[in-house]
Length: 362
Image (cartoon, rainbow, N blue to C red):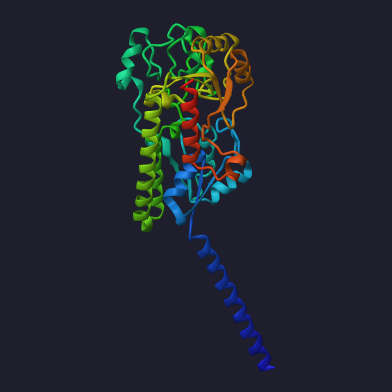
């Protein structure tokens, strides 16, 4: 009987020790990598490039979704609560973030607004702003007062110009539109599509690097090395964009929504947009007619569509002016096809560059 009791006691000890050994091993495996969630795809890509083997980055957006209107599910919020870092753009882009902050306030999740540390250079601080001064244009255009007679209501991000015509298509969010036609978004008139500008993308990547180094200081040196390699590629991309636009026959492009204001500021493009900064803000019939008239005036041969924006009005415009469709990827989210084809930030941006070169030289 005594032997039986001893045997049972030893068996119980072995069983318990086996359980305790197994659990720490699992936790240790889980802690090998920092769990990072992001919003727009470029943030996921920059996190993967900089964090390398030490992180696992996922985007909260489903493939092909619209970043302007996305609302996370309960499962999405649970995933965010289990993560170490949540990196988003800010600047009023992700409408759900403020609610997420409240939901996650008691969770051990570090939230980083990568776009809000950028030192923006607006048209008022650059040489080309003087060209529009006499017309009162505070918009982001870098061309010399072309098309001021049409008002360019479709692609402006400022709240002042052309308010008398009630231009709702230049608003960057769907919240407040006061009686003067002011868009009232929370971050002044900042276009949130900052990742499309390689220069500003580099600043976003630096915010990612800092967040990762704060989370895992033991890998700071490797994060810095990875960031420098990424920054050099972004510099090269910037130079190629600059050369392509400088050598183009004209500077006007037609886009489905006004996500490309930074290309206007940085490179001198002139985007003629069907919708405003928020793809859900469609123009009035009068505003659409202005876009059509302007496209005909410049004899534009191509209309740019986007991977996650379904625009019936853009299709109408294309048929009206007899233009050919071209794809311009805004990179906010990948599609299933992009994922299948292993597209990256740089492959997509270089495809955009090739499309621009084609459209700007015909």
